[in-house]
Length: 188
Image (cartoon, rainbow, N blue to C red; front, side, top):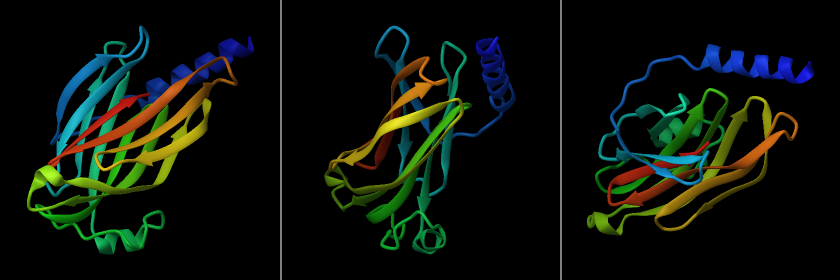
């Protein structure tokens, strides 16, 4: 009986919180198969667009995933308590910029900040720093949380345990920088 009640609450939350509309300045790249039940979904954002960019994708199982990349200026980052005071002014097309990377589903959300340097030769662009991650989850817990970055990649990764250990998987949100294009991929 307890399992049925828990499942009913979970499905009700998906139904109630799962229907909303968004707009997009980004493009869907691909859905690549990882395992039989889990797929990686990727979208690409053009960082030359100096506005918040958002795209929602519904996968073949009906799960909606929303991706957001939002630039932050120095004055915004000083008022936002989770962003480093040393965040950069948005100076695109060239220079150092700060972006918030987000991926959400009706039952989970993950976000973090990246500092990006795009020089005159945009092929040499790089991620300088990844920091200040945040997450929320309904009906589960995250363990073994990591946020790593290289010159071209930033990745938040964690192990999720659903409904008190009845299921689990590895989830991640990865940002890959190539020139002035930022590709966000996730498995959630």
